[in-house]
Length: 165
Image (cartoon, rainbow, N blue to C red; front, side, top):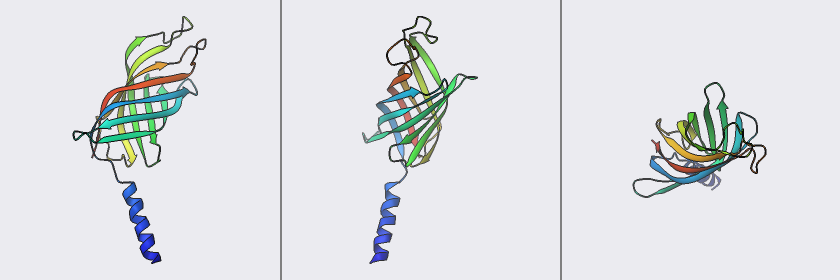
């Protein structure tokens, strides 16, 4: 009886961490971060996606973003809430600037941007993520010390496509 129980628990454990598969269109979501230095931010995120059969996939958890000051690109590590997988991005870029002041010369206007996150790898249940997967977000960068929300960055997911094999 004890062996049957242990075997059942092992199978249950394996089933709960099965890899994600399919092609998903990123429909909506968000990310909220706090800049903890000039080049690093920490926060939380949620992506809601659907595949061609209208099956929904929701990924949420914690994130870390790093700015490379030499290339002006970013990289992110997104850990899901269950800690069963990560998505890793690299070479992420600000693709559009909508308004605001990146150097905060006027003291109060936050920087408004579009950013593309290029997913390059995954671990755990996301280990099958394919190169070419991406997420696009619009964000407000809280870069002005004189204004409300200083160091707080708020992003809205506007699109993307993620493929898992």
